[in-house]
Image (tube, one colour):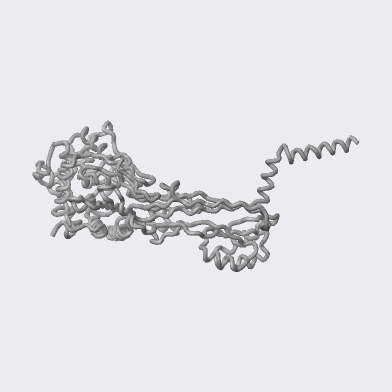
Length: 542
């Protein structure tokens, strides 16, 4: 009787444990074995260019998986999977013979291929609806757009920056399975529909973007550069019409992609800008009232900056009297050192802050570099002189772009940006506007930049029928010892047109060119001609 009573007590305790004490835990364990939850992936938002062209969108596809418990003929299954999916035969056989009820064979399989496989009716081979990105224009703007991972999460570019907007809310299907993994007819079933992500319209123009990528690739090849970058924007609004780096990459073939080629170097890299920086320095001197384009300087053949002697590219061995306009036209380093000395270190540092040099531009893109810009207290004997002609300071091209946009736009700097509208509404980016120089100063600097293109080092950027303002740049590349490499330069050109009411500004950089050159001007000319044509800008010169 005692044994019987103890047995009954234990039975009651187990019953209470299952039904009362740990009922929820056991219920969850049973559900995990009995219920199958399948994700219904939301359709990621489509990204358009400014004219409504689809740059990337999501399409339905299928994840193919196997339930080895249901596979009746492993040879048949492996043969079909290898034939239609192109998977490795040995790896595939190992998967379809595992002691499990679920294993992925291949993810994101095109719908037509999945349909062909489904028609084979192979037991144990099943399908899961999912999404993948497609690119109607191939690799165009790949660095701007970025990529998503296998789970449709943005991991680079605008896909990452606007991931929370583009990503929808996944749904689910819950179904009841038997012990062998097959679905039970009439069993538990619950479906929660997915909610798609938001579409975005970018400021990019596919026609300008296409020409920019090709012109940049041609310039990198012809100049012998290691890589290059290009950006085209509307200086009045900050809208980016085109942006790219070379080399580029294929979003659909990441296995064979160099990760460095995924960088949008305009934003992520920083360089010594070289002589394009002289436009900003000239603006400082004029805005302070210390000089005009006609102010003269007695420019020596060489001038000492810190412990080094600086001379001009023409290697002249005699002094010259030059106006500020002539210093810009010739791109005289020695002349600009004198300009910097007249501005003074305190004023120089204040204007760098006003131009936004050393701070983020506000661009809607991840990974922006702010370079290396010394605080005023950190200046040494060479800082002011070297920065005056664009060395001894490291900045990202997007910072320089924003600052020169201020010159083009009557002194008002705008926020460079890619997003034009979402939810069908245009965004207002005017909060980021700022002024570094006056409108009057900007006009005088523009006049000198016209001279650079009409008569000076930027003549290769001249465009028939238009007044073009611009500035060449050639910066030596620093080496690990703190000096400069021989035969390794960054050639660049920044300019805008038409000068009176600029419709587009373009900045081209070619890093690793083996010689002093105006290698960037042909690319600028090609890109700007296309931009002016696409934008319908009327000729300003007969």
